[in-house]
Length: 343
View 1 (spheres, rainbow, N blue to C red):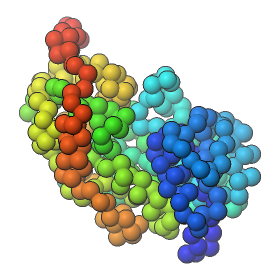
View 2: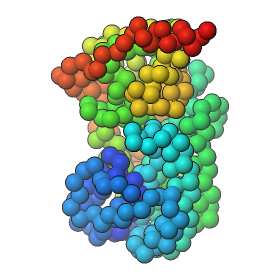
View 3: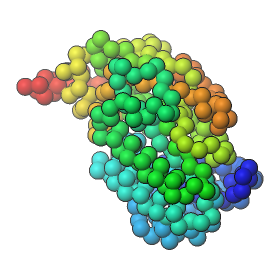
View 4: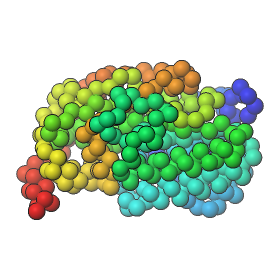
């Protein structure tokens, strides 16, 4: 893919995830793209028309032999998991993210046609601290402590890609740092949490959040595939919104709990919401919040999110009110378990 030449053959890893499937479907509609190849060991969640599916686990060493045969000029890694999948043990989260990513990079090393590598990463690399800036810019990664396992995993993954970028300078490597998505019907822990009939919060804290609309998540991925921007790029809406305002918009009452009660109670609740071992990361996000600047996304990648943070919350709230209450939350049971955890 020469300078300024659009992608022709695009490989999407994690095509069975919602993110990978939506990206493949969007790329299918572009007649300039000759081939879309999806890699996963499960069928896609969305219907795809002209995507060629390769059934292989990203952790399989055979990927190093398979990927070069695709003659891909662009690889988009959507196979990084942000939270455990219902049918897989929590350990799989680390294995897929670390071992799978290393196998993919080994395969990319052997793919001589490769000219563009885009990764769907996470803004968790910035951490969540009370002294953090209102909006992190990309160069501020590593300036705050990484206190949770997931944050350290994200930093480790970015280190692998930086090493690859140095080894293959002819490949344009772009790391997209996504803020958490929020949308009606989205099977993600944040959406489930904000859909509870009563939402536990941390007493004395009202974090500023930056939820990303699913449409903008896909739009940013597509734009990054077509751009030649290198390095890290934050993917987030403009502005931020407080947790209390989101709950008011959604018509959800809150249950403020002191931190010694909130942490163990949320630990159990996180498993029910699908967050599993990521509850430590979520607790810090729901305590201190996190904001990132989207200047590079808008000015250099050329994608301006359609929804700002307030519009994302309003769209979610409208859908939540229309769908009614989620499954009842047993507050007495949560309180009892939290109290036992403190004994």
